[in-house]
Length: 112
Ligand SMILES: [Zn+2]
Image 1: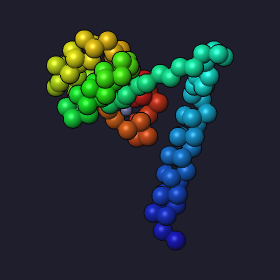
Image 2: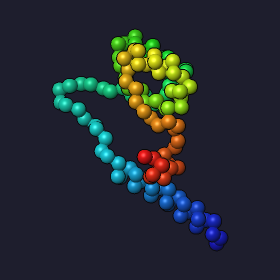
Image 3: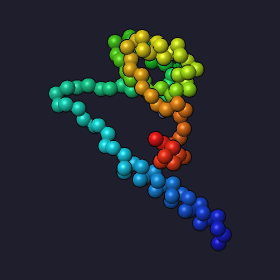
């Protein structure tokens, strides 16, 4: 048997182990709010998007709803008008990295 199958198996195991470890070490997400208060937080990631963001603004605005938009920095720089529209409509804007990269392919230091 050649070295390639062993290398592929070792690489696959290391990749799966890294992903599982990251899940186990992550902070516990908030799953419940105060009893007796029925609320939902709406969040949207990876924008702004010239097609989706105006549509979301329209849908949320028609219902008087607000959301938090976690934006990709380089996309926000490309579409500053959309960012201004989000803020003007009363939505919160959060940081979702400058350039979205797939975290599965990053080292722990690169994900910080
Ligand atoms: Zn994302």
